[in-house]
Image (cartoon, rainbow, N blue to C red; front, side, top):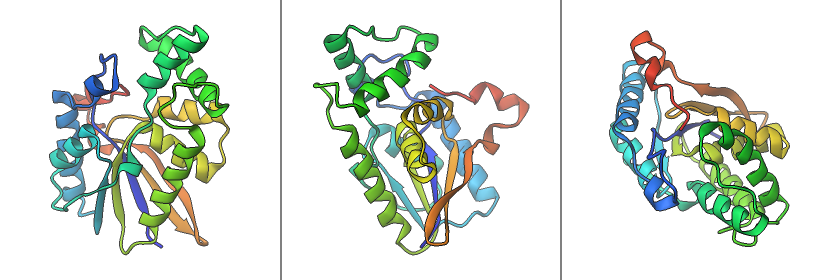
Length: 217
C-alpha cells in the first residue's frame, strides 16, 4: 500500500456562473502550479506516479507543475458539480445562488446537506455515487506501486477527508471551504488503512512576496 498526496488545482475562473466557464486556470493558477512543481523538484520529493481528473483545470495544473511524470487521467477524480447543484437548489427549493464569498460560505453547507439527503432532483450525480467513486479511485491508487500524486479538486479532497476521518456533512463542507489552491494533503497507510498525515500544506506560497497567491477560489 502506497501513500497518496492529493493536490488541489490552481486558481480557476472564480467569477464563472457555470461549470464549463469555471474549468480553466487563471494566470495566477498557472503560476501557483509552477511554484508547487519547482518546490517538489527542489526538495527532491520522490513520486512514482501522477494522476489527474479529466477536467481542464486538473490537466493544466499538472502541466504547469512540470515534474517529469506522465499523468494518468481518471474521470473518477473529477470534482462534484457545485455550480450545477447550486442552480438546481435555487430552482427546486428557492435557495438563492450565492453572489459573493460571504454568501458562498453559508451556501456550500446547504448544498452538501440537500445533496446528501437526495433532495436535489437535478443533481448530475447522487451524493452516494460521488462518495463511492472517490473511495474506489483512491483505494485503487493506494494499491499501486510507489508514492502517488493526485491532482484533483477541493470537493473531492474534502470527501476523501470525510472518509478517512468519518466527518459529518457540515464538517466536510467546512473542510472544503478551507482548502487552498495548489495545497497538498497526504494520506499515508497506517495499519492497512489510509490516514491523514498532512492537510492544506502550501510551503511554496509561504514566502511574504507570495502571500497574495494564497487563494481559496
